[in-house]
Image (tube, rainbow, N blue to C red):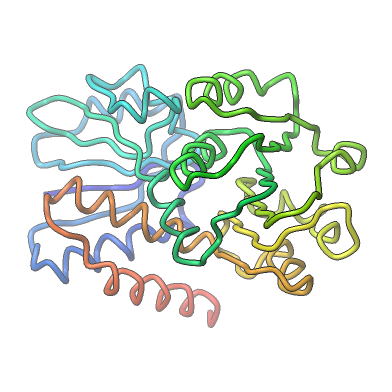
Length: 281
């Protein structure tokens, strides 16, 4: 059986290392997993080209929302947050799922980052929507502050928050907008869903203010540490790498595609080894 991760750009993806390690540990010697460069314009054609030897696909930027009209069935969570990161291919049908939500919730729980106070999300895309659902899953109190680069393009995130029954406070990614981020009492969590480098310009805010956080999760995992992660560590915050999210969402995908329990430890070790290899080169 075949599987792959699709996205653009995709060369950096760690997913092949994680899924291949899982297949090896599970004894699925006839399974393979690859990375395929694909953007929104090529997605429909690629899906049509897949034969019965394909088990499923992992999706990353910019395909998590673009895939929705191409699905034959969407899981309830996919419908709720408007994003699918997993497509199962079964009997000629395309079934959409989201494992990002459970993966992010697991990453937070394992780090002990279950806040009882203010929560800030950086970014307003598909991963930010998954973060809202994960926070709901962990029982966080709202309102949640979401810092976006363009307020005019945040309607989708507002709609997701409404479906989840969460209150969100939107502010702009600017010095004035960051000044408006609440820093009141209680444990504060900062989740950055921005792409690599996009949070660099605000990393210093964690050291000098106005941002404050007891825990910071940056969804980026390569290169690591990011400037945001370094600043968070310097400020004494608990730092959670995007690798933890990647690992746990990949484990969910393995279980959906194979029907077997994911060998998370073997996947973790393979991913860490691949990251070390990249850093040595």
